[in-house]
Image (tube, rainbow, N blue to C red; front, top):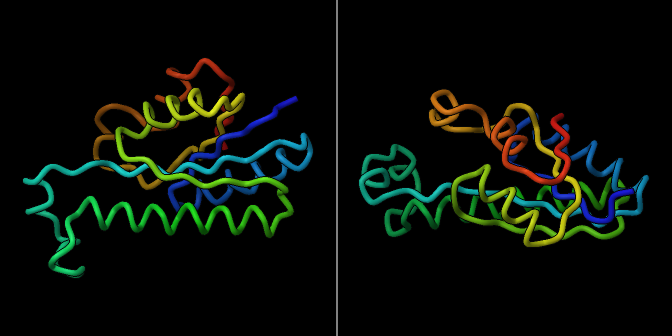
Length: 147
């Protein structure tokens, strides 16, 4: 049925539930599971105004911090998928606009299904332009399962 499933994972409760469904479907189909965590690039101005910066290493820039948090989330998802019995799981992180990065990465990796949570850790951009899950469904040429 599906040979390679991409799960977009951001560490939110919705993404956790989507990961569990992705693992269930992956085991059922014998599919490879590809975990992708996307972080948004921050401009120098955004980084200088960030309240997160004060609580982190003052030498680290915001992109480095977001990359580290994303890597931890991706590894968490990979470990949980393995605990759930998924045979082949790979985890990746990418920087960029969430929906376009998810769809582009799915195409690049040859995924034939994308699974996303209905609600995630989106920014204010989600309120103005629509949710990531909605954008992924409108941009993708492969089926998208929204949990």
